[in-house]
Length: 213
Image 1 (cartoon, one colour):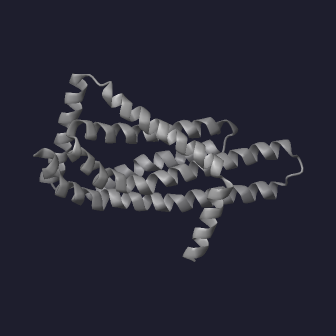
Image 2 (tube, one colour):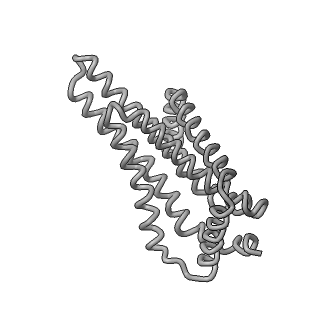
Image 3 (cartoon, helix red, strand yellow):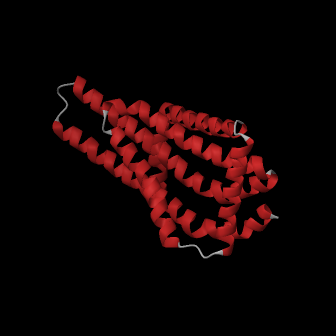
């Protein structure tokens, strides 16, 4: 089963390599823009964000985390992205907005990681490596895959409008396949959310003395 799933995913990536490349490029541009934005912060903005970050670290280190509340927030935030990507895939004009959404997600990752590293140096790099990177490795590829899924479905809608002999049954089949792929990658995103909620706070408590000292 796992071997078949792996083969299907590899075939999917190979058949959509160009789309994956450009979406990945949009994400990298977003990360770069976010990292460069850190350099443009004023000293007052930098001090405020540093104070907020250290306060967040102290809170996680000294107080018990409400996992159910963290889970609710994480599901809401990632759920919004999933819903927006799904809706954009249903519209013909959604393709450029999918690229923008992936770029914005990259900007958030680049800014948060860049800021932590810029303010804490090597300590910040260690913090990013063990607390931000693990969930991003799971969630980001899924978001990009969902973007590819949305673009493909948008293109199929355009194709169905230009080719009149395509049956409604084919359109319905494509729609169910589109929804299934969305659900498939959403499950992996949920795994990333569970990691963020239940594992990363423990890692933050372990690493926080390195950052605060």
